[in-house]
Length: 409
Image (cartoon, rainbow, N blue to C red; front, side, top):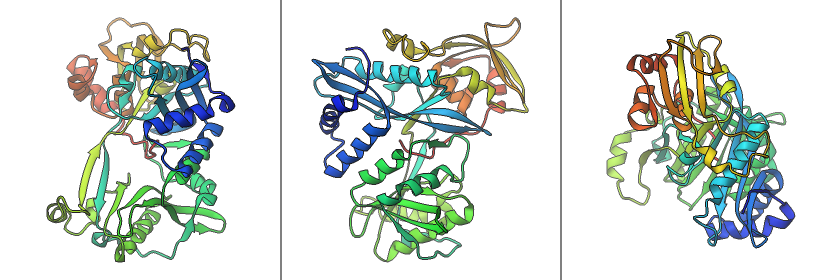
């Protein structure tokens, strides 16, 4: 079963079955959201007896790295049917999709993982923890007032997507070119709703949420805003729901620490423990990234603390690319020996240079180091990365702060 390009007419019914078998689609509206993805996303499948039994869907976008925007391949779906498990199909299809993305000029790839470990085999490394909060909106104290918002539905998905792409950004944040990325999420939600604010015909800031019950929890999937004042208005809007809603779940916004805005946050954790509407803070890494184009990624790095070193990279994705050499440009991963200069103008060249300290790393570990996920000294303890202590310290001073995609996918 070799990787083949998705044929939407031929493979659509089989992919819908794969999603049902995985337990991902239970409602008609969710299958319609999947159909939207099949129409708009790129895909690879493996067929058994002429029918797709494993599939990968991707969508292009960009990731903010310091001041640069790098091409991002978003791996939106990886699924295998019940009859084709443990055949290595998901790995081979994902590798084929990565090769295609690299050939199309994408510098990095990202995905949401079902469990840590599987995608490490393809050179991915985990992103930082994402802080999630369950809290009583009546405890939210925001130094701002809110105006009556406008209700947003699936008909407003294009405006919501444009607002997400124009939102206030930070290092590591992602955007996607295809508006169907947002529309599929909106149509996927069982009881989804959006609330937002406009200037003329342009949506300036909004939230999208899914309501589980009359008293909550309300699960806020995203906030999109272009200024701190807009963020505070959205938070004030959430607080204004507290006359009926007892619990809100949401990821912590990149630009503040939510605990600063909650009354008695630690008391709330203790008093509500094991209650139906328990207040809780969680920190979990759900997403991973990897470098596809080492040259572009190093060239995007800017630092006032120059570092020069020899780099030996291994990349496990190679073992999944047998038979996929013809895909795109024949990309085989980023393994090799390089000389790296990190400076105001950074560069990487093939081969080692005499006299430079040596760093050894896997593709996943080096991707995490480059992005700023964890310090070099930390990765040397827990990941596949090793080098002299002085070099590790220099890298920690030179590389950026932790990234966040700030877009679940």
